[in-house]
Structures are given as structure tokens and as C-alpha cells.
Image 1 (cartoon, one colour):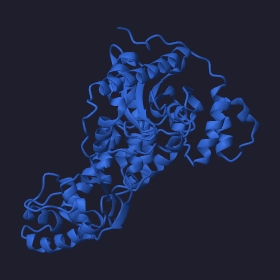
Image 2: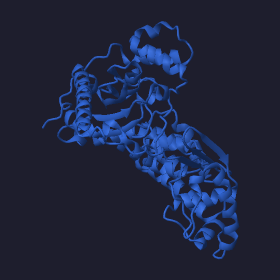
Image 3: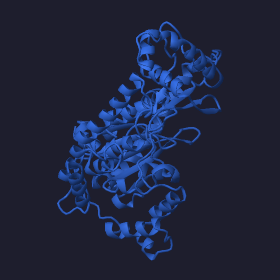
Image 4: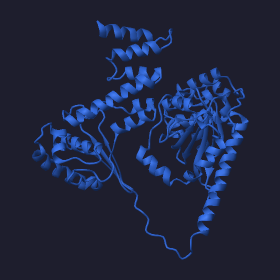
Length: 440
């Protein structure tokens, strides 16, 4: 079967890229009444103004709001999970990985849940944070087809420079909201991203038709489910919402624990020792013996006796703010998953979201800690970030990495940036000077 995206048709934008870029610069620089804004489509112009009012950065990567574990759980329960095969059949028939477009399905809040399609294009869009779990609402990234379609509750096409975020300017996209077939509330959004083929009139008709087909399938599935449910059948008690917890250790001497339950959230700073213990338990989900945990924290084989009273004090803290995280014994382990911002960076790198990973990397893991386990994790995260960026990231991300404390004195990294930059790039002179200074 041939792909519906296989035949490209160039569509002239309503205004030239240059006019749109100049209008965008005027708006962002604080000239909302500039006449050049009249060269921009009213739909886009109003979206830009909403983006500006939401304090969206013109070059900021999107937020990753769902970890891998949260994403898997959320997708499994989402109403659009049951129609993904239909979406693939309609929008990505044949060889999806060579389709020439990317198809994304998001929820009503603009968070992407599934991102599939052309392998080469995904390797490029991953770098700007167009990955599952990231937030692409207008409030998060500004004007884009999925976010603006949700805001306006209608199908939308956004071409190249019309995006508020300059990182997205190389791409064009068409998106349409999906509604609950009975309440008509928005339950999600379908987006097609690519080149000019993604913003043809045919593309918009196909995306709209897919959204309507999904709504019809949701209604059929719901009616079928009701017909199979006996009237007298009683439902069991609803499962409580699982509490979430995150340990933030990047660039912090004192870790921050964020624990969220039903309707409440607690944020506390941990002592250095408690942070080390909790971090080791978070990164060893299968558990650790007292001897092994003591060695990872204290660096001494016989530190179990020193460890135990510290664990008693940590348990008392956790019982007060996050009882679900109180560790069990023999072996010491957490019974629920504890996310860490360090592991989140690794997850982003695995998904190819290099720019978002770099933005999420706030610095070394517990930089003042000398606990052997922490030092090992610190080096693992640093090395993974450096190697992934140097192997796969684009030049803009590499130069941004070179401007951080981690990359400032890395001659190999600076040389790679120099090789990748265009011959006339104004950034080359600064890189050459830095290399010469480091090698002097």
C-alpha cells in the first residue's frame, strides 16, 4: 500500500518566510503594534500573542512532563489507546518508518503520548523535544499545530516560520482535536508533522477525517461495552491514585524530595547522608544488602552498623512526608518507584531528545558527595550525556553543551563543534580562541 504522504505538493505560504520572521522578531522584542504583524495570518498572530502572554520562550525546548513509567501507565488507561491501530492504518499505511511524515497523538493537555512515523525525520525532531511525554500545548511551546488546535478546538495548519518557537521553524504541521463522542469534550489531538506535504489541503482533510473516524470508533466501543455489562453488576471500589515522588539531585548539594499524593504535594530538602541513601535505593530497585548499601554510601565494607541508625532517622522523615517511600529491610529496597532527575536525563538521551536532555541537566549529581555510589552515578550521567551529544546531537545543541561548565574545558568537544559549524559562522572565532587557550 502506498503512503498518503508519498506524493508531495508544494504549497505557497500566505506570506514569505522573511516577512513572518521579521514580524515575529518585532513581537518578541516588545513591538506588538508593529505593522509587519499584519503580514501574518490572523490565526497565527493571535496565537503568537497568547504565547507571549504565557511567557513562552522563543527558543526554549518543551517540558518533559511524563517519565517513562508514568507515560506507560497513562497511555495504557487513555481512551485513545484502543484506536492506535486505526490511526496507523489511516495515516501511516505501508512502511511507516519511510512515510515522510511523523504522526503524534496527544492528550487534551497537549502532552504527546505516541510519536511514530518516518525514522529519519524522528531522529531530527527528537532533538527539539518532539517526543512522547513532552508538553506541546500553546502555554508550553507557543504556536504549533497540536497546541493551537487544542486551544481553538478546531483543525489547524502551521507552516514553518509561523511557529512561535524558533526551534520548530524548519517543520510544518497539521493537527485536529479528538472529542468524546457523547460529551464532546476534547480527549486528545492528532498531529502530522513534516515538510510542505504535511500542510496541504489534502493533509487537513485526511487528519480531520481520521479524528472523526476515531470518535465514531470510540462510540461503537462504548456502546458495545455497555451491551455486554449486566445491569445488576456492581463495580468494585475504584483504585486509589498512585502517589508520585521525585528526587532531584542534579546540581544540588542538598537533594530535594517532591512527594505528591491525592490533592497534595510536599517538597523537602534532605540531609546529605539521607540523599545519598535514598538515591542509592532509587537506582537499585531490586534492593541492596546492608553491607552493599553501606559500602556505596560510606565507602567501607564494614559500614552496615553505621548505616542502620541513619536509616532509622531517614524512615522517620519519610513516614512524615512520603510514607510510601519508607524502605523495607532484607534487602533494603523501595516498594514503589522513585523517579530521579538524573535518570530522567538518561531517559531523554535514550529517546533522542538531546536538546531537552541538556536543558534538564542542571549539573553533576550531588556535586559535594564523596559516597562511592554517588560518584559512580555522577560519572555515568556525565559520560552518557557527553557521548550521546557528541555522537548524535546537532551542532546547535553541541555548542550549547560547550557553553556549560561540563563542556567548557573539553577540547575534543570544542573541536567537534568547530568541524560541524559552517565555514562563515561567527561562532568559530570564539571556539578557536578557547581551544588555543586550553592547549597553551
